[in-house]
Length: 384
Image 1 (cartoon, rainbow, N blue to C red):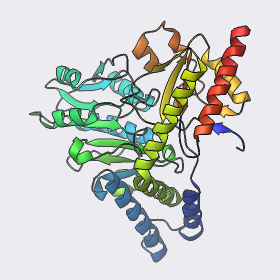
Image 2 (image 1 turned 90 degrees about the vertical axis):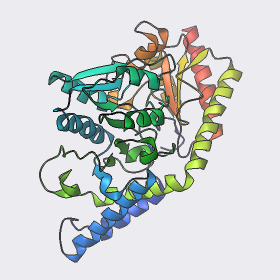
Image 3 (image 1 turned 45 degrees about the vertical axis):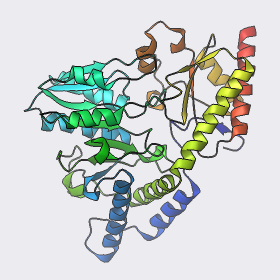
Image 4 (image 1 turned 60 degrees about the horizontal axis):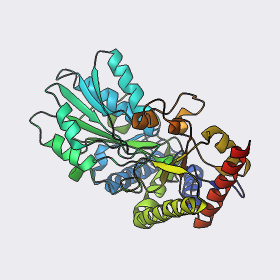
């Protein structure tokens, strides 16, 4: 939208022009079913496998370890539920945190209804858990650990490498899953070095199309599919492949992999600019989470004494888009489980937090404008 400052990239990102161009070409020219054996179908199959190789290379995996899905939610569901089902004969204990995305939290609740036992590790005031907490929670019947890579609301980065390497050294196999939907595209991810068994990614968080993502499944951890029907994705995910989506996703990944260092530095600069402007404006605020150990594009702010819903409306009227939590909870009036995990249920931050998230097209001037509008709204609300 023209003249609209968009600071909700953690919810979804605008599709880059290069991605749109690649998808348009695919829709025009590559309409064949990738499961068909004729030449048109084989051409689509070739595009699919080229994309799979690109996705695999981006995390140091093998192409046969990549299952293309409809996005982060399906990837998380498949990783959690099918791993638990696969290894239920070994035990029924799962470890997670109390700040997971609903796409992990709700499948775990489903598994609890089936008799699985779930241990939720409590984060500290910055949203962080320690490897020591995982070590203390491990039992002989533990079969799965699922820990978010970078939090979608406050941005805190978890010690994924340390946890993965610890689990890899255990006497019994414990599968390690991480929801990397927010982290993929800015963080350096190496599933082999980090000893990650399952990793979820979504295209629309990195300026690709919606409705497509992938799940990395280690070749040492064979699990079955959740979507049943045909034998696509090596019998692990049925359904006719979305070739335009795959092509667009691949182009978005190529751009991110080429420019990752620059993109990360740009987002970090934007975050620092916003914090500098906030300090200069004398707004009474606090950062939720960690500034030092966090995703570069997410900034969660407790604007003290100002109801977040009212501030969001004022900013929207000023043509500025921010959020007051996860977009996956849109329409949900319940307080944020992530903020409650940090502060408890009665802290003012629960109802006074907004999230700024940076991305493609955002400038330092935008940050200056946004903070000025926040200051104006804060002053107005203080007078009413």
